[in-house]
Length: 462
Image (cartoon, rainbow, N blue to C red; front, side, top):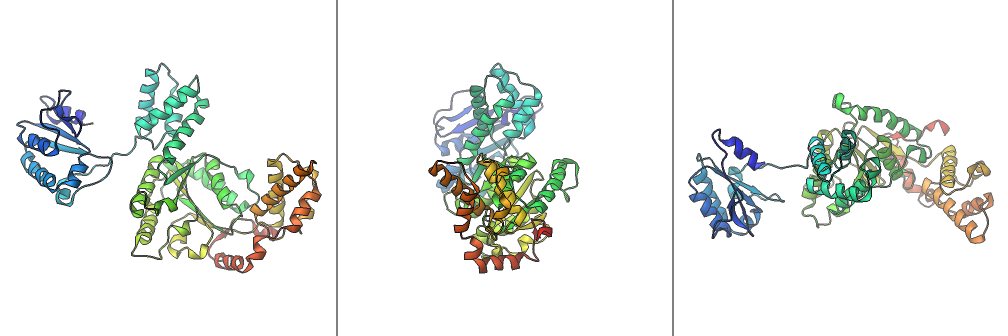
C-alpha cells in the first residue's frame, strides 16, 4: 500500500519508501540498512536529517514509544521537521497504542481483514500459483467461507484444503471450515460452532419456527431492503432445558450461515486486556466475518446495566448502540435463563426484532420431542404408543425427555434386549422434573415473561 502511495505522491517520479525494524535497521527500496540505524533514536535522527521527499515505515514502533519519553519527544521533533517537506512517517503496529503527547498529530487508520473482492483476487492468485484453477463460483464460495480472516490465515486454510482434496471444489469446504474454526477459536473470546442443527430437530416451538422462516426470506434479501426491516436478531428467554441453545444452532442452519459464540467468561477473565476493550474488539471482528449468526449465551450474566459506572455498564451501553448500528449481515441470537435480570432497555422493541419466551413443552410437543430423540438413536417411534407417556411427563423440559430416552436405551443395552415401552415408562415414572423441584422459580419466570415476550410455542394446544 505504501509503495502504491509512493508512486502517486509525485507526478514526476515515485518517492522512496524506507523501512525500519528493530532487527534490520532502516533501509530503502531493497537496499541494505544504513549503518547505525538499528536503534529507534538513530532511525528518527536519520529521518529528520533526510533531505528529500520520502515515506518512512516504522514497524512495531509502538514499543519504543511506550517505553521511552526520549523517543516520544524525538518523534515530535521529527513531526516538525517533516511538515511541508513531503516526508511522511508511517508507524505500523498489531496493537493500538498512541501516546497522548502525539495523539493530535497522528492520523489513525485501522486496516480490517480483506473483503470478498480482495479475497477472491488473492485466492485466484494462490490457486494459479499452485497449478489449480477452480471456477469463479468456487472462488466466491471459498471467499465467503474465509470472510474475516487475514490474507495469511486465508492462505493457511487454502493450503490445508489443497492438501486434503485433489480437486478444489465443494468437497474442499470441510477442510476450509476446520482451519477457520482453529484460527478463530485460538483467540479464546470467539468460538466457531461447527455442529449445527435444523428446525426439524426441534420439537414444538411452532411460533418461533414460523417467525424464523419469514425472517429468513428478509435476511436473504438484506442488500436490497431498507435497513429498518432487515432482521437484526432475536432474544430467546425462558426455562432451562427447553431448547433455546438448540434453536440458536437451528437458526444458523436455517439461514445457511456460520455460527459464532462470544464467551463472556473469557471477556471478563482479564486474559485479553480490559473487558470493555475485549468485548468491543470481538464485536468488531464479528462484523468482519458477516454474514453470520452471533450467539450470546446467557446474556444476562455478562451484559447488564446494574453497574452503570463500571465495565459492565459501559459494555451494556456499547451493546445497545451496536445492536442498532452493526453490519446488516450479522444476525444476533441471544439466550437467557434468569430473565428477571434483563434490563428493560434490552428487551424493548428496536434492540431485537422479537423476544420469545420458551416455556415447558405442551403435550403434543413432548410426544414430538420423544420421536426426535428415539429416531436419533436408531429406534423406530412408530413401534411405541407414546401417547401413554403424556401423563408421566407432565411438566417435563425437552432436556429431561432426552435424558429419559438415553437412560432407557442404556438400560435396554445393559439388559441385552431391544428397548421397549416398559423401559421408557419405567424410567419416566422415577424421574422428578425440574418444574417440580423448582416450582416457585418457574412460576416466577412465567409471570415475569407473560407481558414481556411472545410465546415460542403455539398456545392453542393448552
